[in-house]
Length: 376
Image (cartoon, rainbow, N blue to C red):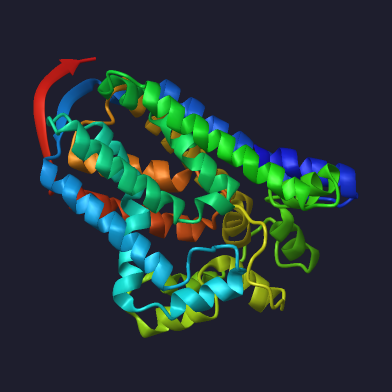
């Protein structure tokens, strides 16, 4: 709602720039129809509730501590402490990383939150001191992930804890410490905002340039529509997916694309269609949908998107989240990929399946004990 409706409407009102709100309205309506459809027809399929214990032995805590230290060392070694160096600079840095360093950094950042949640849900008795050392090591690593320079990253732990709150409270006897830590993240986000306001000419300028403009999810659609590339019918232009090769590891072509910052369909629109030299712009997942498949693809995909989100929410609230390795892997991937609507759609789909495979492999090394099954 913020990306698709509120911010574009405020931009139109304040700056007098028209935004194609019709695409947002269709997307939001289709999303809610999908969510409603699940509530009427999908809940009946969730009839069995499986209770499991996630058993993570102390050796995995030691491995996570070592992995966290290695991650921090590679971040410092490769000059990635400051992540606000611009898209071009960051693309060049990542393209020049040694393969092992890149693998460690990317893997750690993908598995960090899932492993953190699994450690919280751990039913195996682990000494308090080991838990605290592991928690401190992971917190230190988190601060080297660019969280101090990004409001979104600072609030991500809070958002994820809200999403998984029913699971967390069912596993923790005392949530006081967790609430204190999350409150610190919220305060940290406010400090980031306060610092940026102090470096702006005024609070109004900050609000317009650093909030409204950054949250304007229709800017790229507006630019493409202005030169005739979006008409609501769809182009079926498969070249928009060319840059997704960059997501495939160990390919020379992937490294070449990363070196020039061409890692998503967004760069295809900017460089090929619009002829611009910039690599980044405000965007949302509906840009791919409306450009490639028009209103038909937008309606169909957003309907199923609403259905999947409603399914996920029901699973977490009902306890079905912890009901098997594959189920947990899929739920993790939904939680860490599908809520980020500012991504390009094609990249989101690839990231979803990549993370399902990765999370499932990790879960295969973790013992899961099924101890009860209750008919809902």
